Image 1 (cartoon, rainbow, N blue to C red):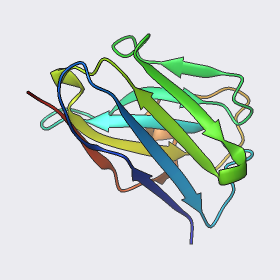
Image 2 (image 1 turned 180 degrees about the horizontal axis):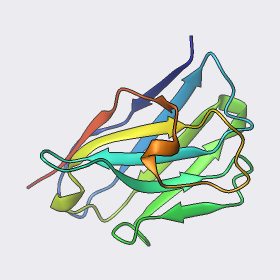
Image 3 (image 1 turned 180 degrees about the vertical axis):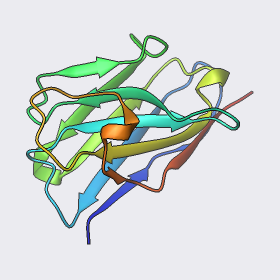
Image 4 (image 1 turned 90 degrees about the horizontal axis):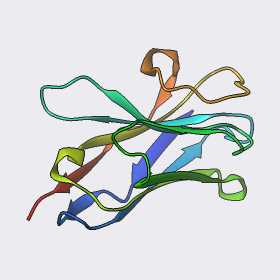
Length: 126
């Protein structure tokens, strides 16, 4: 069974940091790009960051550039999203996703991803 599982969410004060992880089971992420998305209440799911299968290509939403870093650990079939300088507007459920096809470069459009995790809640509040 193909599965993605996110972890690492929680409650953090503004300015704090969290590190999210996304572990794949039932398939390898070795040839797969991975995207990170988030969805706040009442809003559409939006792309946050993505990383190509090689790790050489990354892309970030303007709202998180300079604060978030996406990485991957191929040996552990895992990707991470390091989130620093968190703001209340970063509060959302965060999801990781993977496509069915091989992409040389990663993409940020949610409609192009086939496999999704269940999400992990991130709340930034004092």
